[in-house]
Length: 178
Image (tube, rainbow, N blue to C red; front, top):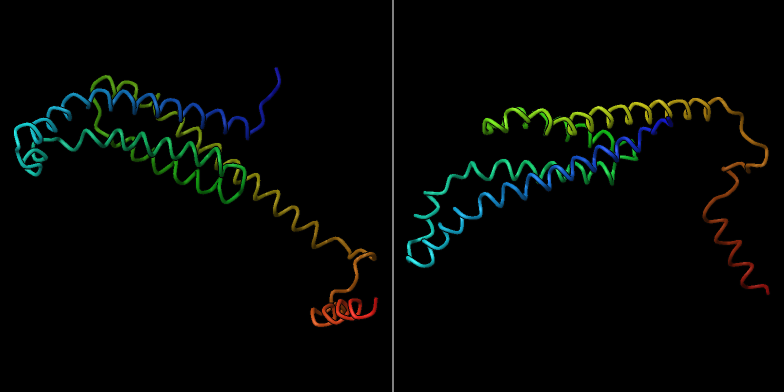
């Protein structure tokens, strides 16, 4: 069996997180739709002021859908920025913050049982992004050492001889003498 490189694992887990987040978001919004529609009908049909209707709405129902939107954003960030070193660091920190927040969410009984299955992609993304950051940092340091140790090539002209003013003068001379 062929091993998948780290970047492909990162993309795989990000895609899985995106799919789970979209599914969970749609499920939550579908469950909220009926009560929210009832409150809007009360405000519009019964001409009850919106500020009185909002008092009856439990705003805690919006926390989990917002968390799912942030998970989707985290997956999108990983897919777009995960190839660069700074992007890997940003993704790792963002995923760890979401993972910590996800552990503190109050869920239903069924939600508590599957909490760790939902947070597994975030854990995997944060670990893989951290590993990717470490690998890219090590490669950058090795390349910096190699460049510092390499002698200058003879084909490279000395940089002190080319001044921007002189280059402009050379270009002007060429144009004036066809």
